[in-house]
View 1 (cartoon, one colour):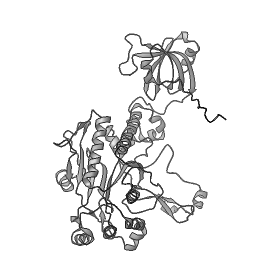
View 2: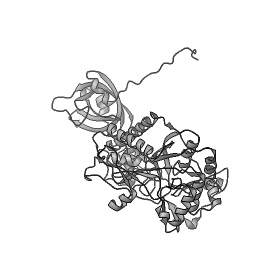
View 3: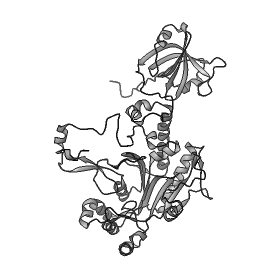
Length: 485
């Protein structure tokens, strides 16, 4: 054992990245990566090496000895380590399309680290023409293509910017539970059966809505989280069973405070990470606001595309849509439901005013709700929350819930409201749609590392899948064969 005062010795790999050779001309270097392509010009073998930073051309001449013999065996997508000298390319052979296109590596040593079978599809193009089922089955190969590598890296940059922006403004990132309680919040829950408590279930969160409100009661005041959300919805073109959102909650704020924070963050993000984008703002250089009624009247949509030139994919038209109705009629269920969610604060003066207005005309009640829109897509939504437990109970009951049901499903939250809850509100912008629009992609699957198909399957992992009967027995579950589709 080393003496306590001894300093550990760390060794650093001598391997460099392709982008680093720009400063290494005339030096001997070591690189590692995948064979992107190979070209034989007589006895001289050229091949491009690909790593996370890009490509560089390697040259194996006959006088390289053993290295030349190994080069003759190389095939695309083999993983290799190479050593050689960084040199200028011969005049007239430069490649202006590559960052390293002025240089090449004269190879002196090649080590094959792993071989590869022929790929199921090419990865040198964009890949849009390839069947999605095949792309998803071999997603780890699909991700090698330049377009998807860029998307995933830029997604990380967007999330890193959000974290740094909010951290600098006093927000704390807090992880909330994935296993929680099933509550009616709009969509169908994913249920998780409990082995230790037969007949009882956890639910995966549709959002951290109740937890973030509880954090405000706890006095945290400024919370955020890059969080996964789960909704068991019918398949739709631009939806996923699980998705990522930036979750934000703040105490002692009004609508303008929340929207002002979002505006500053997103305009700063675009200007720093996507400076070539054209922002459509109002005369004061701000993100415009539009009432729900105005949006429906003039655009026939609560998420209007207000770009001046919809053929310009680099134009970004952010918009806040405000003053939503609090309730909407559900014809199939014959009841009034919350447009956003039941925790949204209605524009009323207390419980009695709410009850009177709901009895008179539920559709006339407005909500302290705001949606965040970009180029015709809803990329986020939020509201000021109801922090009066009596008013919140009245809203639940107006939506058709019996008092005992409200207590059973939300009693924990209503009890917490009895211990000093500050006025609070928040917003939850989606990460997937934002990156999709910034990267000019046709759907969110192109900016998620391992997405499900449009119909909610994972061909790579073959999920969803059956499980052993022993697992079902442990969970006290029986499959109803008559209900199987």
